[in-house]
Image (cartoon, rainbow, N blue to C red; front, side, top):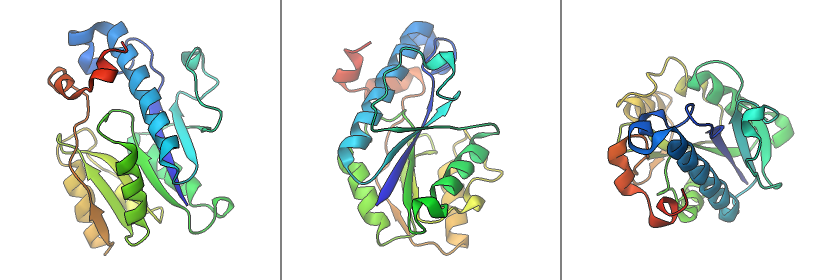
Amino acid sequence: MTRIVIFAKAPQPGSVKTRLIPALGAGGAAALARSLLALTVQRALAAGVGEVELCMSPAANDPAWQGVAIDSAVQQTAQGSGDLGARMARAAKRVTEPNHGADTAFLLIGTDCPALTTTLLQQAAQQLETHDAVMLPAHDGGYVLLGLKLTCPELFEQMPWSTAVVAAETLRRMAALELRVWLGPTLHDIDEPADLQHLPDLIFDSF
């Protein structure tokens, strides 16, 4: 089985999707974040590849999550402190600990990519059965999905996050580790006003 770990920030105005505030306003940007979160959770559950975990910032008991409905089938965990790499590495280590099973594979995803469909999640999980790692790159140079069978902390340490070289640098490090990698299609994140053209109508109509 493959665990899907979704990294998400609480959809609070002024704290999420800040680069979209000039186009949508703080409230609109937060509403979009909430819609994308709901869509991502729905698709992760529908994929049926294994358990789904929502790794949250701040923790689930924080008032910032008040009013955000989360399916009871989703395990809730806290991202904790540190930069994105430290938080992702911590989640990867937790998932691969013996209580989850030594052969636990995982897919790390965010909530910024409405093009990350249930079918693509299933395909990534399937490819992870015969590869050591899988990746779906983003057009901005990052990635929208990273799947691994092992913790591989080297893929998260001292990474230039939020730059156009994240995917390329991650692939370089994977090659250095001699990992067998499956590379999926490149998709669009929704981060900047220009990205809004890639929003499907069902999301646009919901906020």
